[in-house]
Image 1 (cartoon, helix red, strand yellow):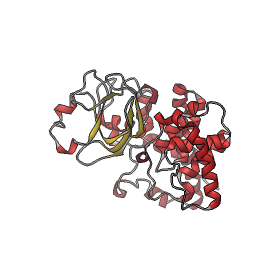
Image 2 (tube, rainbow, N blue to C red; image 1 turned 135 degrees about the vertical axis):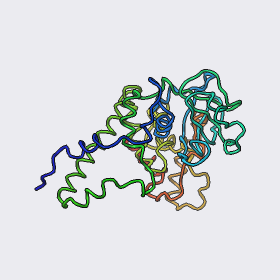
Image 3 (cartoon, rainbow, N blue to C red; image 1 turned 45 degrees about the vertical axis):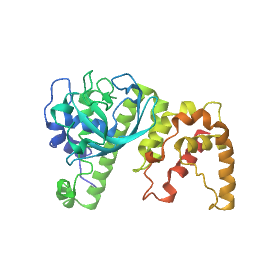
Image 4 (cartoon, rainbow, N blue to C red; image 1 turned 90 degrees about the horizontal axis):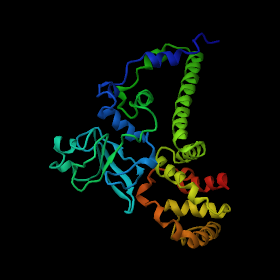
Length: 320
């Protein structure tokens, strides 16, 4: 029997200090730069509302990797501007466009690979030919709600020496109490995920929110962003009510992962891929503007069973 209060974990979370990433005060009605970085990192945005200053839509295929060293805020992002090919490069985040010049980025060689300037507000770009994206009015929840949600994620990925505040208390708990606390933590984590799905559903509808979440989960830790992008294309991919082979052809074709060289495959696999290719070959022109570039995927270190090709083939069964 455990004597741990049923809300012990929740009370600990509410009472713990605010993450320093989110504690720095900002101007009323405007996030500070640290919070804006976390919004971009977790893509707490309405993707259909993302546009450059000149009105072109932007599709974020991967937000990039958060950089806490000198240089741009995010490295190796991948995005596509309406009417152009997908573009890979760094992302710099400022509150206003003039931050580009005020912070000396224009003449800094560390910022030569920046391909997108993300700001909170403003109307006039300051990064020369670099496209500028304004986030004001594109968040998927209020600033207050996002600050609360992000407080639970801002520490992700910190060095071990900066984590472990709960290690001491946990060591003093018995096995039964530890198990009870873990179950409480799991419930809180589930609630946080539900809150994010609810916020997305308010913008795009429940069906879109659930498919995006399912596809992101199929991407595991390496590929949630391209998977989420494919989920966003489902209304278009589903046109004509394809059968199972049709679904697999469209999903694998749009992913850009349909193998072109079948010479090294087993006979049964080669026969299957030829069927898929026959279907995709007839339809590829209709989808060529949304096919993901190979660079959108991180395939190194992915277990064969978790490869996006297999996950997309599985998703076709759900959809069919």
